[in-house]
Image 1 (cartoon, rainbow, N blue to C red):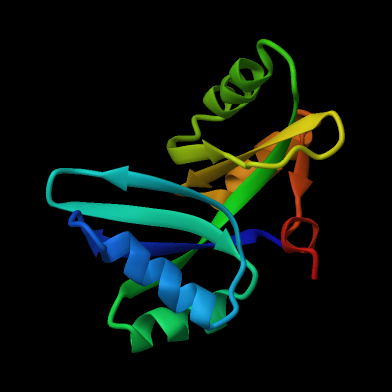
Image 2: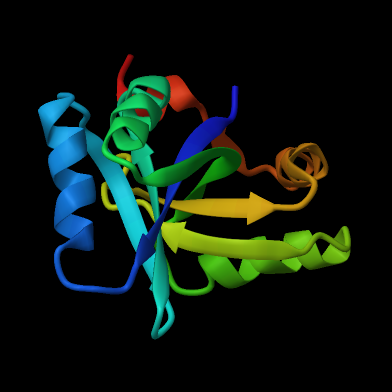
Length: 143
């Protein structure tokens, strides 16, 4: 089971992030991890949340545009060169990373990275062939 990420599209103006966070808080949605990519005019808030469908409804009711996307959460050794070795595994299979970000909580002595690929199943196969552990949705959100 892949991890589902929620992306929210926002104007890059004061108060918009606060509005998104309020909508989620009012709906009792927990944000597990997040990242923001921005330009001068807009931003994309990408996050793993406790309940994607409930979050999408709450955001829609608050007039925010959002979408759900499948991503891979991958365990890496928490040591120098680990991310490089993972990237080399993707490169060997010709896989393009659309974006990535770090998960905010370690799993024991291991770090977790979130990756978005255009072909998630090919990426999953390549990673497991190289011995990487794919983190399941249930392991991330604790349900």
